[in-house]
Length: 149
Image (cartoon, rainbow, N blue to C red; front, side):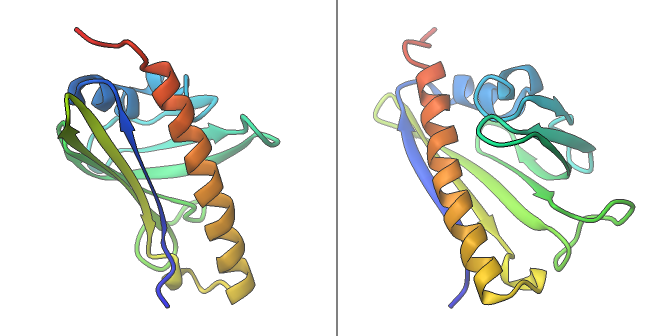
């Protein structure tokens, strides 16, 4: 069985508003990370400092792709000094779709099976991140209530 983490949510806000909220560092800090130091540009390296619900930790990220107002992906968890690639990092992809005057936002973490983790480690990661993304996306939706032009 291929392990993935997947969550999606409908947000009562237009795609351009949701897009900015998932890609602009100062807006990402409102719903996901304590600090964001990465530009939404393919190839950009940076960091996310996480810790809203647990002790803070900083993770390295490398932006993989940006399709304005449609999708955004980055790799994270790769070792210090190593370029992010399959086998040493997890790929996180956000997909935005206009739906019923709002936005369907989907986040998927893939390539977990290539990380070399044990089944218990993999299951733990999937369970923790599935619950985590549900909480973060709920916070994001709460931030955008009434955010219409």
